[in-house]
Length: 104
Image (cartoon, rainbow, N blue to C red):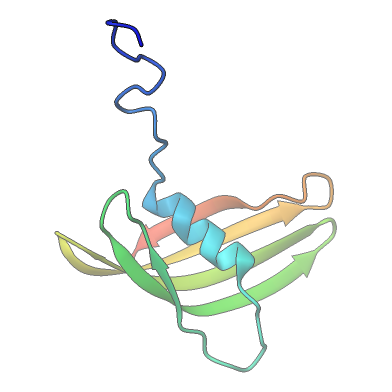
């Protein structure tokens, strides 16, 4: 045992996920069933915000797959609804958030 403090664990060293990242991952991992409404919950333990994805539509074009979605967000500011889009290419095969816009 040493009398010196253990500096291997620093405050702030735990990564904080943004709501945008959690929502994107939820949409990317969704098992889409055409013609069925979705209700896929998401929860961010870092921010305390949560909601659900209520609609996902997948479309394809040359070398690219995109998913449009509608998602709700419950936060201290109230309940908001957003539309968004994530896409991936054949080269990267990873999803990236293209848009996330609050609906009025």
